[in-house]
Length: 344
Image (tube, rainbow, N blue to C red):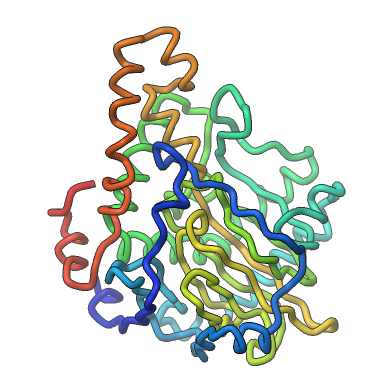
């Protein structure tokens, strides 16, 4: 609660858009962008975006136009040794990158042009059941060692703590639903034992900056946790752009930001060609939540095997948008939500 009590707020005029949620609110409607290029700061200024010169340290809750906390500039822990943690995390990421072998889809994808790999538990895209994310034997070994690295474990734990502090109802819901999944499937493993997030992606650089996009298969109301890493000048580039909130946020290496990436369009400003930017993201696939809501099976299986259960599931879908949005706290409700009196 110390972070919640000390945080300031960053208000924005735009409400988070419910219309971006797909039916049932387990995933979002995919956002299609016409051009695959990075936004420029002069263009964004001309469009009326606010450029926020965040110091990367001060914790600030992001408010939408409905006074909901829809993200947080988490910064970093109040720990004089944190710079050392960030250095060690950079070393671990570089070490893992040297060990990994990347396929073309790992390097050229809709988010950008940089090598990325993921580890953990996911479900979606026509799969029959939740599964551990697949990697080659060599890549799996490198990612396993990366997730065991003490610095990476500390960063993952910090993101987990911030989610629990600023989105406590979202956090409790994810924890409860994933708890059911993992009890029924003990072979599935989270990437970090310091975090409740079921999956993590590692963007290895040297130029890990994103085009405008949404992560539509993520749980829409849940927040991703992003930590910027590498060696780049955050005054010149690497900023996080939240297009729907019309914000351009300075994003220094070693700092963390959390927000609902399925609902908010986001991307980055470029960094200089000689600079090195990496990032590390924790997230939760919305398909996992749907699997649990269907009693540990697909919607098709529920319909076939349990018509009454399927009818109840269908009837519940119309209520889910309101239930999901109610999990966002407000500044007035946050401390009470942390104590657990709010509904999940």
